[in-house]
Length: 335
Ligand SMILES: Cc1cc2nc3c(=O)[nH]c(=O)nc-3n(C[C@H](O)[C@H](O)[C@H](O)COP(=O)(O)O)c2cc1C
Figure (cartoon, rainbow, N blue to C red):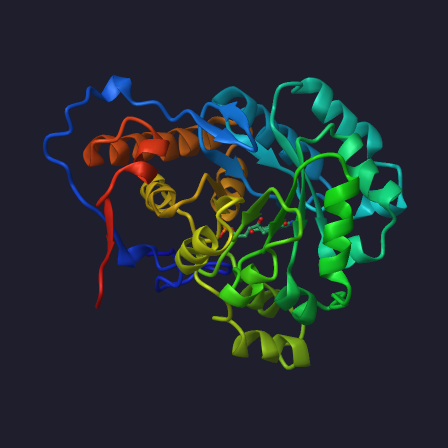
């Protein structure tokens, strides 16, 4: 169940409350044996967790990025930066991005750009986003609803699929397509089969929702877009359904899950359903903003890890991978 706040839901739209992991009273394991070790884009990682891309365009963003990067590097999480859109036009952030990478040379970092910017950018511009960070992947976000409702939105998506195909061939690192809280339907997933993506982050309905955020931040509540935001406040495909469908429709891709993940137990459920990695955005931001030192962020991350370990122990699994491979670990609760 979600906290009720801008960007969250009072009721469970993620579908996670409908997934149950069966309790194993006799796990035949010692807790210390449990490893969160996983693989992401073919590389070994200490955990299956990542911090999902959040905005990088405001003052103070680099300080936040630095804090996220430090915590992720320490704990073995991957780190997705927010949209690098500014870098398509201006070079003033290059030093900051390069410093971030230099400080954390072994951190798995993902570059980020929106699909409407991708469509109008050259291959040289896109490669630059990856190069300044020496990123391990390029994450492209598809945010159709947000672009429609945002005051300064760019809902021009024509040619997006073809451009994605081209980028997959030219950018030189794995390409990941993500949503930003509205998920992917079965039909959209089917259209992604031959694109050349390495992974898809479903980022489904159930957590941060741009319909709600754009509605909440409008200066004038009678503004056309603010009013439409209310109408579309529950729009999208649940994280749970998107993971189940993606697993079936795109078996050769890594499936990542974000959108409304609010505990290590949520993460365990999504891993059981087939997610290779699990991402958090809004709760990570809340934690990093809580203290000057990184204490609150570390504590929050430790909690996610511990809760995942508990879920593994109590299902009798010693790794996230086993949670996926073991038969009869989860079920859908019908109401
Ligand atoms: C403050 C904020 C900024 C975001 N900026 C981006 C962005 O620049 N690029 C992107 O791909 N997603 C962005 N997102 C979307 C998140 O990566 C994620 O898909 C979405 O918030 C759902 O996860 P959550 O429910 O854990 O917040 C942003 C989310 C938040 C909360």
